[in-house]
Image: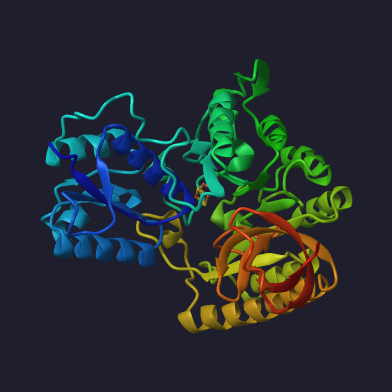
Length: 439
Ligand code: SF4
């Protein structure tokens, strides 16, 4: 019997991508084949995102497309918690499961595309690092699931539950397998990286015969020994993070922090119930930069949160000017079904949201452009992501894949993805850099 083919559509954030990789790895281990087109697949799995309305709409469209093109569809992921809504719109779906329901998804594939593996178990179908959906040279490593916070605009805790950390030895074994397989950059993701291990009470794991505590500092130290770029995402400005900054100054992990601040007005942060909302963030950033001057901070913000006044917004703009963040994304608040923020009085009218967003972006664009201009003439490390006709395209230590800027090195077509090269910055705009190779 030929192995059934499974089509896969993966939507949503890096955490959902890691879920997809885990499901695919399991199916491949069992002998299933992965199909790259709808018409060849015996069944299609759609891993959905349900975070904001636009993501929900995209997921529902993707389900519709898979039904139209193939007809045999299993739905999983964050939108899966709204099974009734999905079934109402797409009654033909075979099964709906929620986020992190790996066994249920694989079980649904067994049911709808049964396969008794006849492959030789000694022929390894899956590389030791598992199936990865990212290019070979970088990989996301998810260190925990869920979240203990209850931000009022977010439904992730109700979708994914409270924080559940993976033990440090498990994370380190995965990271080591990835590095052995050629990965040059590890992107550490979770919903709250700074809280890593708190749910388990920071137990010891054993890696390479020595204890490693299940806590951010110790994990970062151990990851720093792997000799690849290590980038931390979704960190909150808690005092515990202070201890990680010296590792960045020593070059053990990348001098990069992805901190979703979301706002700066204490009143709005409190209404959002943001983690670390009572911390003096500017003071903390200043202290971090003293320890590690090359530290790059990327962040996201929400404008137009219910009850946000012009004064709150001005506090946010002042914060931007003071904090001089390197990379910033900004969203206009949009209500998410089931979020408690929907009950907060005084929604901000759409035209004011738009006007604040425009003002916010104008301030940040100037800051970003000035920061990138200041890099002209400096020599930086660049990891190559792809090589095109005109040259190589890569990223500096300050740029995470997909969300930050790029570095273009004209004519360097002899380079290969995954190489880390030195280049001299010759030009810049608001987002990207242009550089020449340095011998
Ligand atoms: S920290 Fe807040 S926004 Fe992030 S996942 Fe937890 S509840 Fe949601």
